[in-house]
Image (cartoon, rainbow, N blue to C red):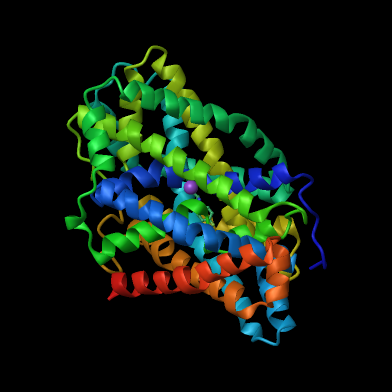
Amino acid sequence: MSETLERWTTRRAFILAVTGAAVGLGNIWRFPYITGENGGAAFLLLYIAFVLLLGLPVMMAEIMVGRAGRRSPVASLGHLAAEVGASRHWRLLGLFGAFTVFCILSFYSVVSGWSIEFLVTSINGGFVGASAAEIGAGFDAFLADPGRMTFNHTLFLAMTMLVVAAGVAKGLERLNNLLMPLLYLLLLLLAGYAATTEGFGPALAWLFMPDFSAVTPLVVMHAMGHAFFTLAVGACALMAYGAYMPDRQSLPRAAGAVAVLDVSVALLAGIAIFSVVFAQGMDPGEGPGLMFVTLPVAFAQLPWGALWLSVFFLLLLLATWTSSINLAEPMVATLQGLGLARGPAAALVGLAVWLVGLLSVLSFSTLAEWRPLFGMNAFELVSTIPPEIFLPLGGLLIAIFAAWVMSEEAARRALGVTPGAFAVWRGLVRWVAIPLTLVVLVAGLF
Ligand code: PFF
Ligand code: NA
């Protein structure tokens, strides 16, 4: 591993890469369904509180460690630990992160494949004039077909690993940046349309009038996990990107901008989706199919609906593509650190993720009732445990490393803030983020 890696050419490029990692399925697919499963407004409030109190300070910690180490996550952690005479075992945190993203990418690729299927159906006019029930039935038939699911999963993962192998992610990030405003506009348009339907009032009430009586420690843990997941924090994936961050860029400002953007995309998607849910008398707790059934219904009501829907799925695909490239990076960087060339490393990671992803594919048909742990099937396990337990655990360890282990001088320099601001950040990490994460994890699990 070289001493100093190549830098992103501009400050913009860094923000683009981090935004690309953050905005994805977490905002448009996972946020609405998990909010639906956990009762709405109280969950939403908890999630926003966690983004501010945990997500943001730990995101800064994670990027800061990468920028201070200027190596792959494993090598950065080992190097910075050695600098202060701490245990070299901190390197294992990098491996844990690689394991976490491995699990996440295995289902992320499968669900992104659903977007490919829906994009094709939409282009073919398959949703024109279809009712909510028909669209739901079509989706169920697709889920029950392992062949089609596998085809889309394979296609998406190949797209991802090709970009990773070729190292052309920056080009894609730029394309992403060019087109993300359009995704944002489309969501705005949808939310605006939602405001004219009778589902809008109930949706707003449901999203913004909290009822805390349904909040259990488990609900709190779900909200915390989602805050980490949506910001891409806790798996050393942003640490890998931090290694390329220019020296003079403001880290807090970049992290803050990404968090605001990420939360607002989720809110727009939530407003659009829940308006349809209430207008159509659907169940907010419908689960992973929620977005895939409601959005075609919503677009079908609009003039040029099929066109907009196709554009929407295309943009969603682009957003998930840049997120999955970020998911793959820590694994490929780790293998490179072991001496493998980038191409073979990407191929190896791709193959392993593809195989494990098949378990998620089959969880909707053959293996639906195979529940090896906690009564969950394979898809439920990988889409729940890594985001809700591994990411907070990884974030916790990253926070401890950044605020207690690393040299204060190196941390402050890499964070690039005044001594006063540094004290505020470190106080927040030491006395709020770390204890809060611990308490929520322990209360949720036991
Ligand atoms: N933040 C991504 C999303 O919201 O879709 C998911 C993600 C990317 C999680 C990268 C974790 C990660 F390391
Ligand atoms: Na996100």
